[in-house]
Image (tube, rainbow, N blue to C red; front, side):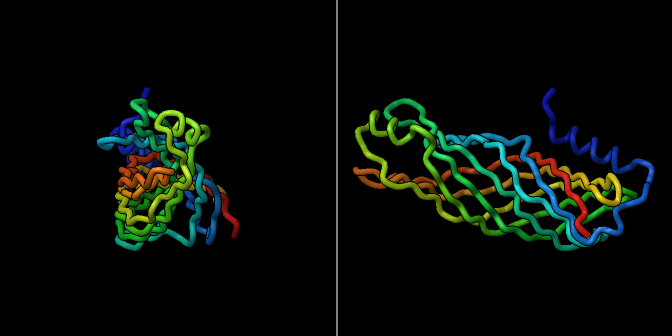
Length: 215
């Protein structure tokens, strides 16, 4: 059964309303990994961006405080650009988007559970690499040799719902639901010129992660 954003949010609220327990109060720095477990695809007039499974670092620094406050995030991810070449769709390249973001939000706390509703914004550093076999396919279809690829850096915005559950005083579980807005320019340089287009690399994201308290 597919997860729906509203159903998932209701599930989080249900868990958060459970009987209070002992939180991870002794944690000052916890480190782990976050996994993108669901993402959406987007089409432009000529390209399509497909989600790619992504792993990123996840950390928890200091104690959570209820109420309004600043929030920070990375939310790195990648998309594959599919483009019609010679009349047939070709998975052309993978674009990596690595934002550094800060923002503001409101935090609710109950026992071992913490929920934050935030809006983050920042700047993303982007890179692009050709997919396996893309250069040869491009040349065979249109007779042009690919000599370079590039993706521009871009500003990003991400509203999100962030949920933490303290399993014990060492391990913490994180679930995150958000929508990333990113529009980098992607360029394909060939022997006949430069093909530059703006990619709609927006993505609805569901992430799950685990951290371990270092100290």
